[in-house]
Amino acid sequence: MRYFFTLIISFLVLSFLVLTSCVIGSIVGGFPLNPPLGLELYQIGSNSILATWWGNNEENYFSGYVIFISTNSNDLYSERNSTNHLNKPYITNSLGSLPTVQASPSSITKQYSYTITQLPNGDKITNDVVYYVAISAYSASKKTFSPLSNITNISITN
Image (cartoon, rainbow, N blue to C red; front, side):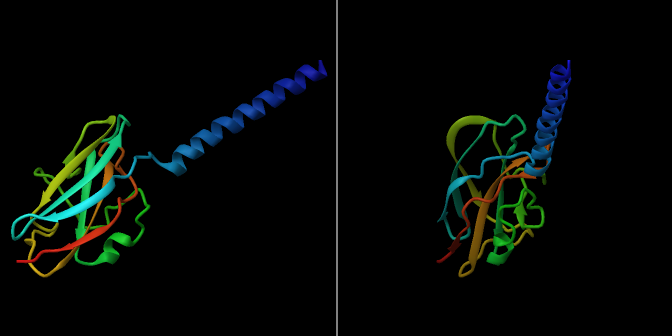
């Protein structure tokens, strides 16, 4: 009887530890999304930048990608592994919301692209200015981001 009682108590304690570690892990870890890979920037025309990257996120809460751009590299390098980048300068979609580029969940790695013609504040891309760009996967329903992609820069020339 004593063995049976010890076994039940052990089972309950172990079950409690497993359940609490799962809950703590989901709270601390957030809702993980894979960061985009291989961000490259190209000048197209006199005042636009083509950003291309690779991504795959099969999570059902994945909404797409958010593009961050700044003339100050510190804007992007600060807390780049965070899951909240709302303090960084980002480009909204045509409706004024996020993500910048909508995408469906997929386990297949795909290449994405976006043409940048203006900064988040509405200023046009201009010559002889260095622009720093990064991309993040985004979940609109969870309001969370992946860590940033590689941060790269480009200067538009005539």
